[in-house]
Amino acid sequence: MSVAQDEGAVLARLLADTGPSGVLERYGEDRDQVYEVYGPERGPLVVVVHGGYFRPSIDRAHARPQARALADAGYRVVLAEYRRIPGNPVVSVTDLEALEDHLGELGTWVGHSAGGTLVLLRGATPNRPRVPVLALAPVADLVAAAREDLGDGAVVDWVGGTPEQQVQAYATVDPRERWSAPFADGPDAPRVLLAHGDADATVPLHLSTDFPAESVTLAGAHHFDVVDPQSPYWPRVLELVREVSG
Image (cartoon, rainbow, N blue to C red; front, side, top):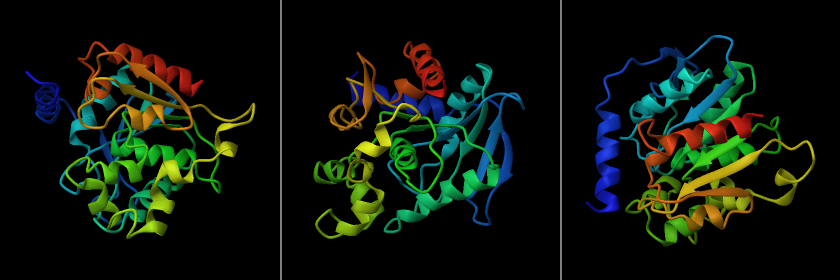
């Protein structure tokens, strides 16, 4: 079985999971402006942002096993849903800001794949309080992802054009474009960490290792190993969540 086939099989298993959903809450009027809550009421807050290459057809369902596993580890987990509108990427960002405002508290932000893009953007937002961030196999460089045609043009579809066609849009929603030293420096800066498997067939490792923040390479891990509680890499992911959360 190829790595891509293995990734597909794991995703299918995550989607077929029949475990319980979290308590559904709403932070806006749109059907995608919702979130699920898992874990102990007084546990440290972790906001989980799912991936799916920003496609409207891919929602939070595959992230429920991850959310339950974090809850089992003692975290109070908010599994976020958000709008994914082709050609209007900013609404994904503003939805997550609205969710945070609705929650009324800060937590650790953990995102996978496209969700990793969004949590890195949260970590590089100058007008909001700083938060710890763990980006798992993130699409950390949208310009590179667009030029490499990752996800069959998913980034170009989400942003609404190529980097040459939508210069301002990429400057706004590409964490690699927005990131600068002040976000990473300073003794009191919250931890920002990227973790990525070197066998990832969906989002290449170099998008994380080329990013100007601390990164961890998981030898042998593929794209969904980092969010699969049955994966041998899951204990290491839990360690990284603890390290980032402080």
